[in-house]
Amino acid sequence: MHLGLIAVVIALAVPATGNGEWSVAPTPAKNPGPTPRVYFFLDASPGQTVKESVRVSNLSRDPRSFTIYGADAYNTARDGGFALRTLADRQTGVGSWVRSRVANVTVPGGTSADIPFTVTVPRNATPGDHVGGIVAMESAPGGIVETEDGATVRVQRAVAARIYLRVAGTVVPGMDVPSLTMRVGSPLLPVATGGDLEYTVANIGNVHLIPRASVTVTGLFGHAVKVTGGTPSADMVPGAAGTFAMRAEGVWPFDLVTTSVTVTADGGVYARRSDRALVVSWSGVAVLAALAAAVWWSTRRRVRSRQARPRGLVT
Image (cartoon, rainbow, N blue to C red; front, side, top):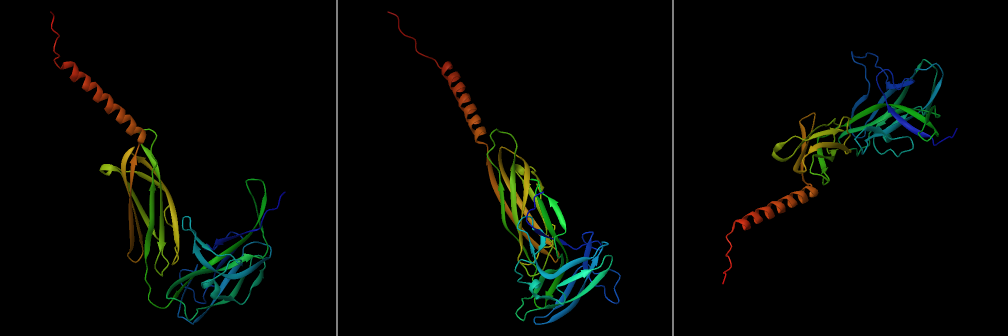
C-alpha cells in the first residue's frame, strides 16, 4: 500500500448531521426560536467585538480531537462553488477576526462541546458582508481515500459553520457578467454542429448573493439552439467570481448565433451580457461554389448551343 500526500478537505456544515461523524453549528440560545440556527448571522460596527459560541458534536462512539479555527470564505474560479480557506492558508477577512478560546478540543463519543469565540471587527473594516466560518478539523487525518492509480491518500477532514457578518454602513448589492464567449468551430460538413459557451458571473457589490442565471441562444431567423451545462447555484461572497461552461447543440452550418446571459438575485439585482458568433462551414462554401460553377457552366453551354452560327460559302 502506497501512502500519498495528506489532503485537507473542508466540508460545509449541514443541519443536524454534519459529515455523519461530527457536526458544527451555532450553540442554541437559552430561549431558542422555532427555527434553530444553522449559520451565524451577525451584525457589528467597525471596532466592535461580538461574542459567540459554537457547538461541536461528536456523533461517533469514540473520542475525537479537533482543531478549531476561523476561515475566510471564497468562491472557486470554476463554477463559483462556496468554499473556506484551510488552516494553512492566510486569512485576510473574517477568518482573521475570529479568536477561539480553545484551539484544540477532545470531545467524548456521543457528546457535544460548546466553544466560546469572539469576532473583533477592525476599525477600518468596510461596510457590507464579510463571510467565513468557524471550523472543527480533525487533529489527525482520519479518512483514507484510494486514488485511481492505486495510491492511498490520508484525508484530514473538517466541518464548518458559516459566519455571515454584516458591518454597519451602506450596502450595495450588485452582480455582473464580465465575460461571455461562444466558440463554434467551422463544421467539416454542411450539417448542424455544436459550440462551447463560457461565461463569468461576478459579485461586484458588498452583499453576499445567490445569483440565478438565464441563458438563451438563438440562430438565424430566431431558431432555438439547445444549451446544457452549469449555472450559478452557490452563495457568492462580495468580490468573488465564477466561470461556468455550457454546451450548445443545433447550430446551423451557416449561422449567426446570438447568446444572452441574464443574471438576477434578490433585491432587484440584474445584469446582462450578449455575444454574437458567425458560423461558416467552409467545406459547405466549397460545395456551393462548385455547384454554382457547374450551374454557370451548364447554363453557358446551353446558351451557346442555341446561338445561330454563320455557315461557310461553297464555291
